[in-house]
Amino acid sequence: QQQRSSLHETSNGAMEQSRWQRRTEKRRQRTEELLNSIELQSEKLNNLKIPTLGIPQSSAIDWDEIDPELDPIRGGKLRQGSQRGLRKRAQVEAFHFVVSAILNAQSPSGVTIIDAGCGAGNLGVSLAGLSYSSSINIKVLAVDVNEHALARLSNRADAILSPEKLETFCADLANYDLILSKIPPNHSVIVVSLHACGAASDMAMNLAIRCNAPFILCPCCTAKSLTKRSPSNTEKRTTFDLSASFQRSGASADIEYPRSKWLMGKLHD
Image (cartoon, rainbow, N blue to C red; front, side, top):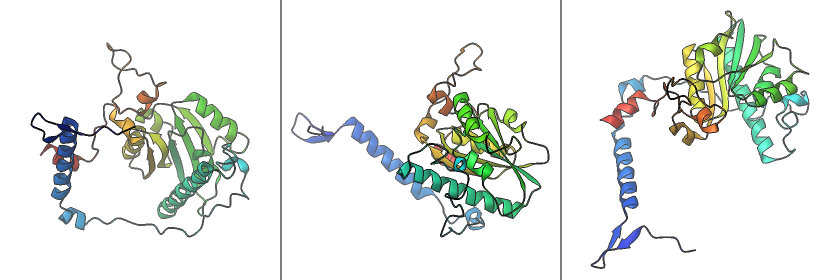
């Protein structure tokens, strides 16, 4: 099938851009102007010190030796040798590596790792059961709005992890205070979130900011964040149909884009 051209012929025979192409070109030009206006040599950025972590040459996790339920392939019932299963292992390895570095740097007496948007637990179960170089009391709080996913997580974890190591909690990620009420008073917090769709990753970030905690995020389906949550009750305007994917992934009222206030200011200049 021949691709439709974005050019059309005028009455005098000249070729002219379509309205869509002109609009796209205008957006592209505006983006270029915005990027060119960024002052990378500003004093604030020059004084910014960003710590770095060396990339490990090999994984600290021996998947053949640990309990099968901690393995996202065997415990998560993914096909052995599949690319998806290998990616899940690599993701767990990366999160475990960064969490270990945070624990070594902080050395708190106790830590709750909030797995925000935990799903069926391929990340949370692993982080709760894997070993760390420090002997810190670690607990994972697995939070998701999907009760069925949490039930699958519990069925997988109950045989190998005690409630002191992993607890599930059914809640909307936008309900920050309710989630943070589950944290023991003597615990520090680390927030992790793997593939929380759309604005759910931003909610995980907000959750960490609320308690001044480090966070590790790997976002997913970022285009869904452009959808704002629509209240299911137009009079009260407080309830949402969180069984719908676009509502769970949609941005709550406290989230605006772009997230950077500096960039927002540039866009409005």
